[in-house]
Picture 1 (tube, rainbow, N blue to C red):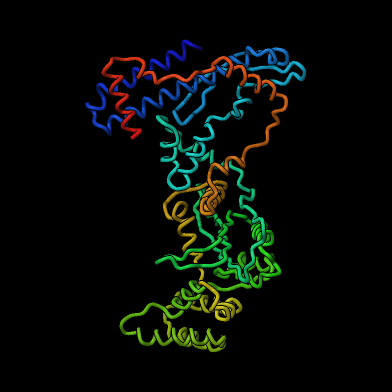
Picture 2 (tube, one colour):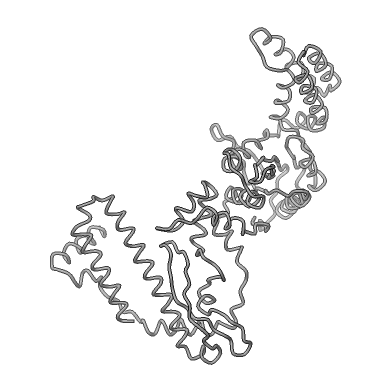
Length: 469
């Protein structure tokens, strides 16, 4: 033990001396810090390897271990740490009573079977992959090593994100109105076809923040839920019932584009009212009226005004008559068919339009399109790429969990299975006691202050004094 401590002590002295004498002047402060980072990464890798193997030796020499576990063989394992790849030796043991075979070192240090990336490397990898490309995430997760795109994909695919991550309020919140916006994205798959990850946002209020609208007390629900849309709405309903006073709550507005899966929410969410969001209504009306030219601007503007007025008065018969006037003037067959479809879209959402105008004083407008663009499309569908279905599901959930301030670390911690350490607790405790007794460090001065030339010691003391000031 003394030899290895002496080795690391001398390494620090040599490193500091060399960098103070040469590199800081040769390469400037920027090059100096780059090289110093590389040196510290190498140092961290060596130190980690030593400490892991030292713990293994202490386990091996422990009396309690010899009583309960028989040594089988010794092998080498590689793991990726934030310092880069680390290789260490460990022993395979067999429990004498049960014949169960196990790596005690892995069990005690919390290294999972077949785990290649340490937890903090996984955390960095996933945090980066949620925002950028798989390739870039693999380049920055660990120092000096590139993790392949395929491995990044595998890490995302292996996640189990079907659990609820939201935190229940200790006391149920009292609000009269709750708002839900719902939409979906369209993501291209590797082998052809499209997946439609859903997004539902539950929030209490919307506040203008400059040009942006900020949703207050929002909570996201997300995923593909193919042929299982009831499970998504069940999650939403459960969240509302567990976090809000249902007697005090008067209305829950479900806002969307009229898709069947969105209207399904009315069957699951208590006190819910469907509202056709204004963006899709306006888009349909613009499509019915058609593009304006200099020559047709006056006529088409008049049509628009008449349509909006008829809808605001709930005169859907009048709306239909206006549409027929427009259709009679449309000479192009494909456009006429498209305009007729948009007219029927409006008519099929009569109830949603009634609720839009009846509650316009307390509605904030629907920002679903903006949410999908910001959260989903920005990473998943706005660039030409192909996805696997499971990764579409997990990436959509990861991005929305981030929106809800759930960190990747919290997500990874929830992935961990509860491990029963009872049979290893005594070995773990006694190994720790043995290490503490053997090392027993005493307070010492920094090595460069005790060693080196008089000038070097003076320079380092001056640096420390300057930092203290």
